[in-house]
Amino acid sequence: MSHVSSTADDILACARALIIAGGYNGFSYADIADVVGIRKPSIHHHFASKVDLVRTLVSRYREEAQAGLAALERNVPDPRDQLENYVAYWEACITDATAPFCVCALLASELPILPEEVALEVRAHFRVLASWLTSVLERGKRKGRLHLASSAKVEAEGFMATVHGAMLSARAYGDSRTFGTITRPLLDRLSSTH
Image (tube, rainbow, N blue to C red; front, top):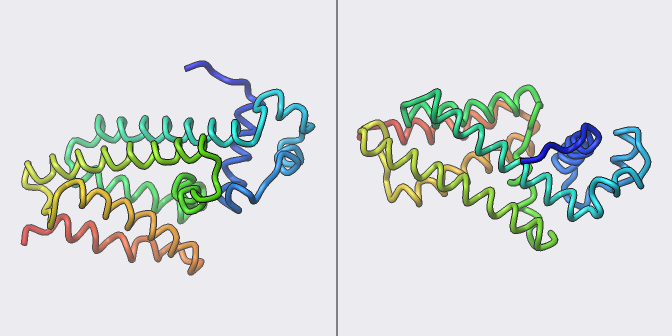
């Protein structure tokens, strides 16, 4: 993967924060120019259009997520602990506001209005995450570490929906503790042997 310039990284970081704060239509190149301290033509130099910018952002976000999941696989061998660490990551991000919402979850709520190029990237992120969760749940069941009430694929989709829904609830209530209140019973249920 080629590295883009620092200015492009700054533009992407700014766009990510603005999307998390207000969604796809919640920002313009003028907003980015103000925050980053550059002129709008400089943004167009790096990203010809908003579609290009957000498509690149989501693609890179998915790559970062895949790298994070791969690191989790390498560093935490137990499937149950992998799920715990995944949830703990989001709980910490929501609590300290470093990443109070998954950018792809937010964009998924806007799929009907997103350009198709962006929607394809968002869907790809969900497929990657669901595939990883399915594999973790399958391994956990095989090793007797996780109890599944239905297929690993169905459980993975439910797990993903619960985590993203907990993000939404924490945001709606303005209380980061809501996330743990919602996700803890899910982890407990999966860890139960009965």
